[in-house]
Length: 194
Image: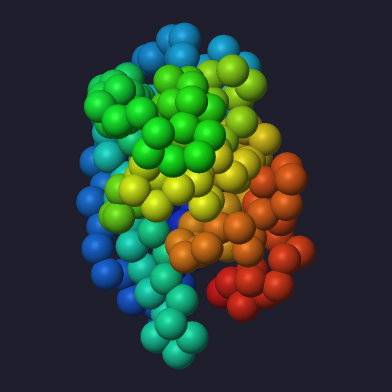
């Protein structure tokens, strides 16, 4: 069984030009039923949720100023993080942004599975199983990247994002097509060398 996180750590440790900036890895043994993921998940994804209480890993490669960041939202915290997003959506005054009702409806169906230090997150969309980008400042700045499809599924996300060592892209629009992460995009060329 493929452990995407262990694979990342092993690849990074083999590199002399990559520095681990921060990491917190806590393993545990659980046996979740995964009722949330109605569209199904692979045994590899089940393994990650059943075996990692926390996986937070940040690396950087100085020569090209490349960095990677991944923080798994543990399965038992997904519903709490979903509620937090909904509290934000429910507290917004009417007419803050264009297409506000669409954004609010999206947020009611999104469940954060990976979070970023600035508050953004990759979210599982319960309506279709896709992974969408939640931009935490959507009600302040407008839609911008909010709702961008990052992957067709959690499995697709992990398979492709892991190939570029979970790189953190400032503008995810530069790294996806209509189906999600597109490794043929120019932005990934330097990451695929790592």
